[in-house]
Image (cartoon, rainbow, N blue to C red; front, side, top):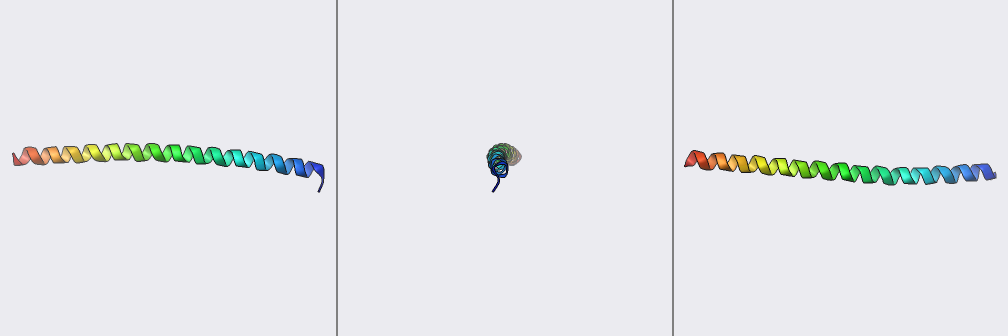
Length: 58
């Protein structure tokens, strides 16, 4: 195997590895944020519904 191929291959694998880890980290961060916001929205909706039902029953 020529030296240039070996160097290019190593550089490509290194870049791909860093890119993969960065993608995983960004995906986790985005998913966590969406889950957290979704949970907060869901909780607020539930609390408003309960409050309206209690007010209506009176």
